Image 1 (cartoon, rainbow, N blue to C red):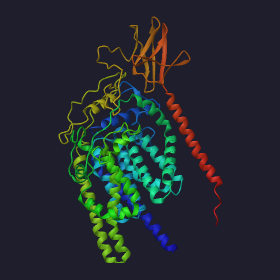
Image 2: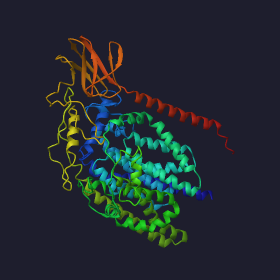
Image 3: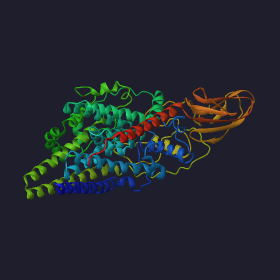
Image 4: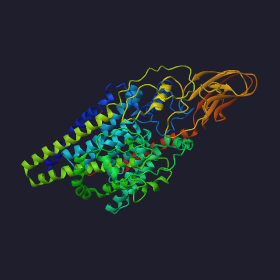
Length: 601
């Protein structure tokens, strides 16, 4: 018996190592268009993400400051509180080391590898082995939904690849409470990485899964663990969550989304090969929002595996079906998306079909079950020859599906990263500008020439210029004045005087201004006012004022030297709560260790 257990452990260890190597190579091969050459830019929303990453990187490396304020976009707004700011994410280290262009591609490579290996590990946990487990990883990482979001630069969406690890930790937490901390940490990682949509999608799947688990287990524990995970995640993420909640009132509401889809759109998304980037594909949404290609063979395997996977884990399958109903939007017989949209958390999101990614994970697991179950049956019957034949056929099908997904999406991804970055040198001093639509050539994809405004915004940042009309999903307003407007008076000016103050130091969070005033006046910065700006002058610190929506401070007559700096109380409060949460977790772990009964030999 002991020998059998050792053999099983050895085989499992060997299988995991083979999975690591296989999915590492597969991720690199699949993403070759991103790295050929590595310095090329993506189009559509890629420059938008590069701008956010670049601003945080410049703030940290050039000025040695936390990225609290963003002076470059929309006339100045909180950066740390923005939903897509990700300087707290461990993945951001790649951006710090290699820059935003190369670093973002390394992040995608790491996410794809971790996602496929995570799905593979989840399949093994469900006793889906060999070719079935590999197929689960392939379908989860290389499906059309992931490819399309990668092509259009929805970098935050790709963090949903970590969902299998969240499911694994959640299931372990039902037996070992310590895994609640691991699950909460993964959710916090998504939040810190600017992956708000993936965090919401993951939460929907986990809550639905936990709800159905309560019926199967006839216990309330699955939902109680979920509440523990939620409390831990809120505490850990408070350092960013509280500033973000305070900032959200500046966002312009997008209104409830009344789009919908049905089985016809779903069938096209799963089976249509060679989809391209087309705007206004369904209503006001582009074709990239309605692709989830996996191919005919996985659909066939899904049909085989449904019975067996439902029998094995019907709560997770039902959770996937809930996600499917949500993804149909207004065309669903039960308008679940409308109910979710009435809640504060879901009020700012749009496009219900994006929830289809949750269905893809369940489908991948079911396909793996459909491929492995016949082999498992033959193994149990002890028919060695048939086992070898079925294994050969199964691995052949996996290779066929993998090759198909690579070739189909290579056609999509190859033109996206052929754009060479234009020349752009940093200018001094900083001034507010207007992001111009990039007029140079861009790759043409299905008649779509996307990303011209986002690219103009990124080029402005590289030249140390602001973009008051920047592209942003929060649809922020601005009061700052771009340099080419007639009423532009400079980046710092006196309200009632013609004297010209000088900016002697400019950084993301701190601006020093010196000058002379003939009488008492208001010194105005050409940055949007936001609560949290403070002024240090004459050894005293006061709160900044608002002058027509811009940052201002009173100056007396004569020479003056003022230092404006941004440090909102919400950041301090959030940091204190996160530190208290971490301290509480550490104390709880120590107490648990000390009170644990000694193990009997």
